[in-house]
Length: 579
Image (cartoon, rainbow, N blue to C red; front, top):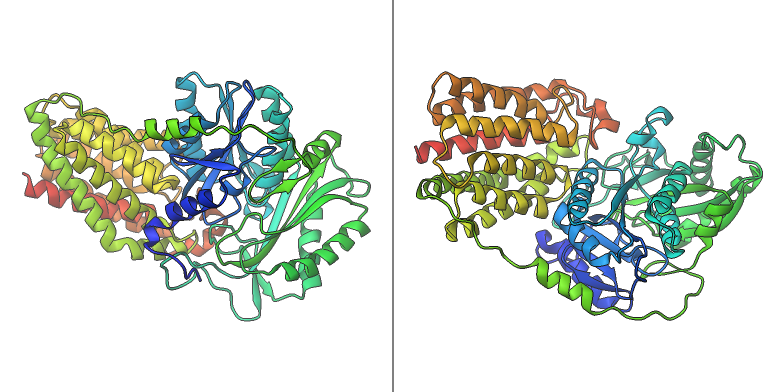
């Protein structure tokens, strides 16, 4: 378990602070993560990577010459927010455009996509690429739905080495796509990981058994098998990966491969070496030429006891990029000439990012409405805090168990930001939009992006000029429902928060159309939401981290749907108090 921490909520920030203090030769802190401490040649494409904390050396440990130009770092097992990614990319970019790279998880896809839009609006040419190498998380016919795990490293490195060669953004992206298409990973675990402050692991494995095909966020494996010997583990990993070759590789014999045997946190290096001796022998028997293998901790999951094997099938170009030198805190290869330090740009960006904008002008009526908004956000934060452990338990049935943690971070930050905006005399719209940004920024992950979208949609509908009536609130909720579906791609029946948000919005719109006062209309819609959340227990998930473990979630409601239903009922109480 994770034993050394202060406030669990501050763990990720404090870990990043200590990391930068220990590695100033390579990195400098900026708001949201780190960038290279050395100067980047003008016009070079910046490769910016990122993901949640808890996976060191991914992602901050891979920043330096020959690898990433910057890394956005989220909370524990949660994607960084769009604002964090935008901040890091702005500090890292050198005029040649930005390639944002990350593991293929819903929260990362949402936040990196939003950051790309913001960078494009700033005039920075930006592309995105999601690594999807975990063959256990989806079949070959759905390879785009696979998770990104230890295959991040060879794909990141290929793109970064191409950027170092001065190639344009479109070509750097093509290299990433080529490396991603030729990378496969598969993992096993003997015990789950325990998050800072938690008293139990996210999943457990029975004695003398192992989980097969696990995820790096504490997602349980897709199956269990008897505990193997080291050689049996090696055989399982190699034979599984050799069953699925890239489309343009007919036979492993005569092929070259970059090989990574990755420790997930608690398996010691000596154990890894025992396994690797058999991995190397089996690949050799299959006729595979191993190129610059890596054995060690490269993408971890706190204290999870487990290993994964990654194969990147090389051609001449990919081999050149894999062998290219790199110098980062956690990954070094070859030799590079001395580089000039770049001490000023990052600190200037950080200072600019922390500026607090004044509240725009608002009418007295909108300021009075902001009182109700603030009370509602306080009710949201309190109900989430009271049910955070329950939400985590629900989420852990088939996911990674962090929904309660993320919702607590987000709702607390949203209430704090709303309180600050309200104190500046902001109207209802601004209070909600400031809360939206704070929720997305502090929660990260899928829920952070979606709740940021919900609050922002409501804020836009309410505005700062007039006293919002019931119809306008209903319009805002309807737009929030549509925006969440556009952003996340989920529809009713996918076992997500959409299964509650859509019927809630429809019920609220119908009730207000009948002329019911807002509190009464909201009461009716909240009752609908509660029933809809309970109904998700009968659904199988078709999206998100729970999808690979769909059967395990049958009989349990979706955590996001359940939390939304709790929130709608809590907000009703605030509306009654401010009626």
